Length: 229
Image (cartoon, rainbow, N blue to C red):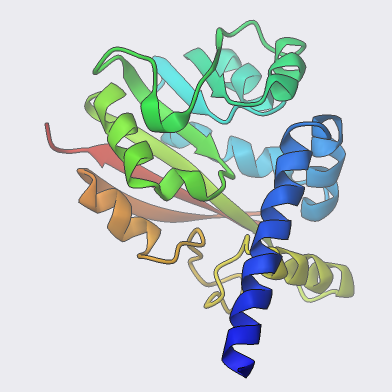
């Protein structure tokens, strides 16, 4: 009985977290920037920009473009960026920051021709990124030797009370791998079936996980090169 109750509680908790993130990304999209600033102590955009050195600049698709900060950064770096998101609220915010073309669609069925992007980029995605249909769709739209670049999460370093509180919030909301034991560990996206590395590799990619040390924090960047036809 106790196991059943725990399982039911976990299911309800996960659904509550999903609902909360949905609100943050849809009706409460205007709060996304201040919330992300608070939970990263002002480092959120720095963590996002850590992906730029791994991007093969050229034709770049950003999955889940959010408020549009990375679209602007990609354009400044010389990329021909396209943004894709399902949220009309985020699209409105992104239009105020970037002139990049925006597309509203599901990531599992990207509405683009095969082999048309040099890079597909996703920063701080939810669990959709490890959906096999997402990975197959990304593989299809990438050029040969194109790359999928993912920033799954960042870590605050140090052991202050605020940092520990933020780390706890990430864990209880499922945004940090339960086996991650500190800033030196390599975290993965939460996934019940397999690791991020395994799933991406199985979809036809050669995967590398890099940890980038920044002032007061670390960020993880996953680079996946399209290796099979």
